[in-house]
Amino acid sequence: MPRHIFILPFLLVCLASALRAAGTVQVVMKDDKDQPVADAVASLTLLDAPAPAVTPPAEPVVILQQNEEFSPYVTALVAGTRVAFPNHDKVQHHVYSLSKAKKFELPLYSGEAKELVVFDQPGVVALGCNIHDWMVAYVVVLATPYFEKTAATGTATLARLPAGRYRLEVWHPRLAATVNREVVIAASDDATQVISVTLKPDRRIRRAPDATGGGYK
Image 1 (cartoon, rainbow, N blue to C red):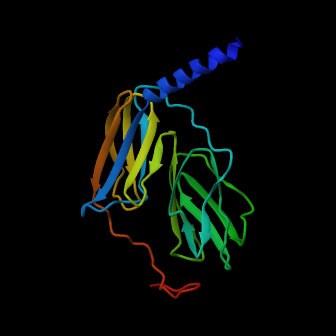
Image 2: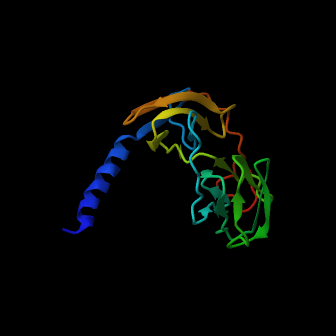
Image 3: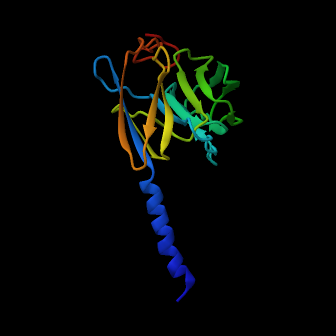
């Protein structure tokens, strides 16, 4: 009988065992009115073991400019990731950041940007447009592969986590400070972390509904 017939079941058993040994943490974000909080970035960092290697994706992440807004509003990615900033508007945009983790600018352009931007340092990067003051977005650059952004339901699920002790961090644009707590994950653990926060007022400039190029609300 061919040797590979015996190897395949063995590999499947090993894979199933590895998945059972992995834990899952669901983060549930709520504000002080018990409403779900979207666009929060939850990340886990191992405390008692070396940080696992973080490999940026082969393809660039896309942050779109459309209807004179950035989309998505919050992007979470690992350090070393390349980001494309295509402009799908009829007007030109001038994308920039003055954040310590990544200072850059893409002078006025339409269509595809002439270059990709590499986010190589962990930290929070605030994006803006020199022409349209209301255009604001954030890039959260991480040094861990264990992260997720909360959906409209306020939940984020971090799966396939090795057993161990972690630092859980949660960031949101309207939090006064990053939320930190220690969590212990056992093999095959399935835990829920409910985090209630008080958000600062949303100070973003709002355009009037019929504004098409420079109106403010």
